[in-house]
Image: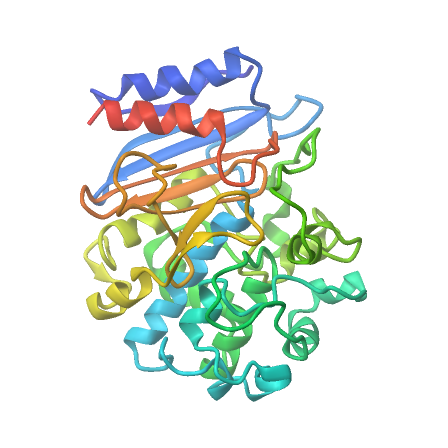
Length: 372
């Protein structure tokens, strides 16, 4: 591998050792891991290669798609709008987006939709895959879907449609896109290198992905899983310029480990970051409130959802059941432990097959907690 770069603060040497062990075991192509305690960075490591040919070293500013780890970052934007009185989690989503009321969805609240309870994890019937790269057009098609299970009967993970719900909600409520608000009100002022809708000028520093060699491991097959993940039209063609530039707040945020961890630090610090109130405390409380918990229709285990972020009741991300987290396709992931003010993120370009767990990431998180 190329040399590991960056730093681990005194006392966090075990994290660097775990990071390098992943490469030594030939589990990585390129990767980064970063952690903050409060506003203080304690780990920021990167190494390996950003191309499959292993000719371009992973740099400190290499961008990589974090897939569903984007969802809580989109949730931060919505929570900010909740704190500003622009959105209310308890109002029906159709109050902002009237067309969403079609096919019996008029009473679903914003919080229900953002906690994967809206019953529309994907399209059971064929659609043009190009719609995924045209969010307003995809939202039109999504609004007409009938729920795949009755309201109030639990969650079914919405891997892609969640982001079009979040994006259309923000566009209707604020007359701006979610990516624009993230850039203009959070990332720009605070100097955070994270993008939902990545401009063409940044594409040259994006990592190439090495796709997983096995299909994701699901539980017992059902119609919701097929619609969400497995139909030929269930996802866009990923990796091209159009995909990077589109705003897909569920699945195509691009960042570094450092920038992803920094945004999760705003969750760990209950809405504060670098002395700035990103989200009001009341809105943060509402954002992270448990909304649904139990066996999942789409994901292969029991999961607890707040309004756009998962709650660590199954202790996937460290020992604290109050930690907020999300994993992304292929193994990326980030978490925010509000009891410790601790946030961390792992990004990589050699993708694995697990939907929620990843042994490489687990090794790093275990080392991080052992260093505290």
